[in-house]
Length: 340
Image (cartoon, rainbow, N blue to C red):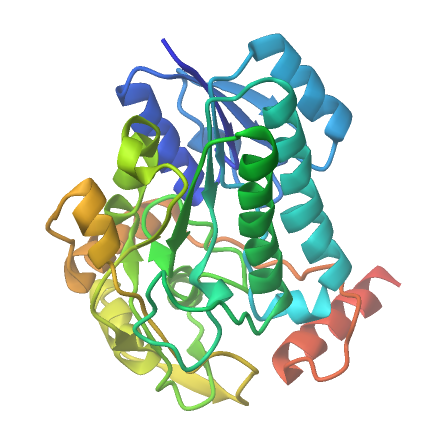
């Protein structure tokens, strides 16, 4: 029975991956600091350890104790837009924390390191995005993800560490943290509807994304360590068909049984059109039918209605306020006044 470390396993995608790994016969150790996840997301059959990948002493101790065969690294704070304003936090958690895991994997002879990167590494003007394009990230989150990808290549060349990299995008589904106001637009919309608030859209809402059901993402990630052709490769993974944010708002409102109520905020600095080509993943992992946006959103809406609204907190460690979207800046100021 292989033993796998799963970072971020109390989070949304991570908890679904934990289910998949257990079903495939892995012994799963979940490491999560619960900054964006919930203990109840962790399957009972997995061992849960609360802690941060930034704690290199803890990371080294876990590797020595469990002698992991595989590492599935999903822990990250994946807020592209906010990452401009939390640069130190972003690089500490998303880059330095990852390096701690790479070091430990090399020192303890891990067989394969599976890393979930992001299509944020591509930047603008490259849709549909394919793995052979030159990455040009436009935000610190994408920069950090690309740096980890490059570090894994360097670790392979120097130490022989095997790796597989996935670039998922715009993933939604049950267990998503709908309380996070800075990321995961589907969850944000559903939480706003439950609270009787209008859906907030930055700019004109004509931004295009291919929204991906989590069930179309995790199977390839789970099985990748057993696919020789995947070693040393990068794969886009997710949905094929792009929708505008305005179209998404209509689908979400319909699934939630609510009238369409939305408010347009000033635009923020973001890539206008971003969706991926998945032909490489199909060649290696097989061609599988994808869940339609309407079906996936309907199933997530049922889960959200069952679990109810969650209060949206304000990120408390903002480092740069210049050029911050007004709605974020106002919420940050109100939070600071409340704490004073």
